[in-house]
Length: 307
Ligand code: NAP
Image (cartoon, rainbow, N blue to C red; front, top):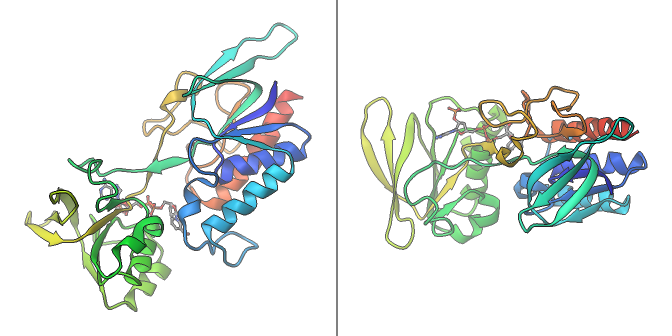
């Protein structure tokens, strides 16, 4: 019987594992993809208090080592559902988490730390051209586009940082954004001003992905004029934010209209014994620091619940 089963081994999940292990409970993280979650692809982290500068990869590896050296286990399985096994008058409920491959894990508490996944544009051929010009990760794929013209779609920090990163390799980087104001920090916009190979295409959305076997052009529509123009690019980096992936757990926890798990700063869901941490819950600020903070809060709540 596992004390604390954590679904997701990103910053929230691994922080929860560290706190659970230090509280004397055994923590197991189920991870579908990569330890570290989305932060693993961030080239530079400069806003985690106490660490002036590190990379997402280094940060993730340090978290992983810290959690596993304390005794936490990481199992690479995708959780598919949670079922409550109701307890008796004296015993609390336990939970069975079943993975996509059919494995079952019985535990005394669950922490959902599933994070969020990259939002897709929802355009025809977006999936087909993935890896053939379409990418959601400039850090991972940018080097394939050395000397080529590319576009980044989005106006948040990810899009601005991707554009800055790509401008070091690519001949030209178009930033396509649906408004004329950016959500990303002024510091990132300032850094882009020093680049002479950036071109902004504002108030515009990508409407079509064009090419035979690979992406060759994107069609872009200006929302003010209605004009559509085709821009020749070898790559389109889609950086339009994230969305949660909590549907498998909707039978045990309540989701809001956007699919985030309803919970407040206590990280408690409406089901006792099931907690939530990080980007997958309803919250105003989704940052590395708030993910780590949630991990601590959820783990200590789970340990208190177990008793
Ligand atoms: P984000 O801040 O949510 O920005 C998403 C951007 O995509 C917005 O500009 C949004 O436009 C646009 N967008 C959303 N849906 C779209 C659609 N369907 N079509 C076209 N455009 C669309 O996402 P993010 O940049 O990935 O950042 C996520 C979080 O991580 C943020 O809190 C961010 O600050 C943080 N982050 C921090 C750092 C750092 O501190 N170094 C680095 C990366 C990310 P609108 O602006 O019009 O809504």
